[in-house]
Image 1 (spheres, rainbow, N blue to C red):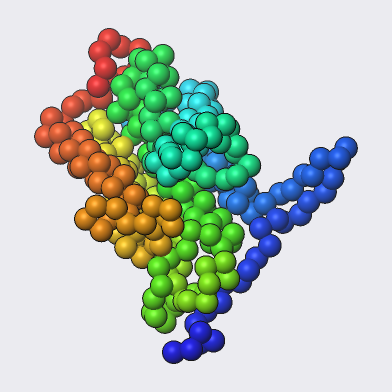
Image 2: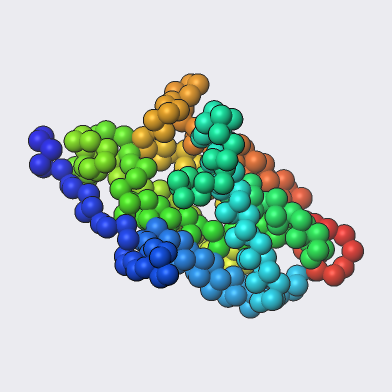
Length: 282
């Protein structure tokens, strides 16, 4: 098939609109807008969960959730940047440590962002007298839509494209050369975003053993990311690592193992919930 028979990336301008204020360029970008949509959806769905009986019974209020959401967002930004630099640009960081603070150059890692959120929520959980697993159960369903919207932002920007292929829906990304490629950003948006959210929303409708919802998120995301990486182009400066797997796959393996382990232990123990304010953590 000739390249003209494949889909062409729409080549959307990444900037929706921009203007100058006192010599500073201000711009609203599609990528930033997708993150805002994800953030506001998390806010909406979290407040919705606060009204559910099995969450209300354990101290979840709109105020508590608002504080958790704010600090979780801080963890995403800091952890995402630090994780990207360590996992994907470590050698460059060693030679140029100030690169860590160069947010304008782009570069965020989901796995780093997840570790940042876990670290922040672990500290905040102590203040709430809840375990990290219980906080994770509440937060897990709020995450996938934001992930999916972020991948749509990657697609609009024409970045993080897939591997060369000749499937009927292959797409030519101008910045990636003339070869048709998997639109892997849309695969990730679908699986890691909307499908994972649907599964978690259904699973968390009823009370579950402590840790089960968070464990399902780790397991579900890990499996989805590991699978899509077979269609996603590895980072050019890293390529494929040992066993022919990408960095994304190696970082997803611990998520799969830990998530599955948490779910197995949670259902095996069938721990009862401990309402906030009482002694003991679950």
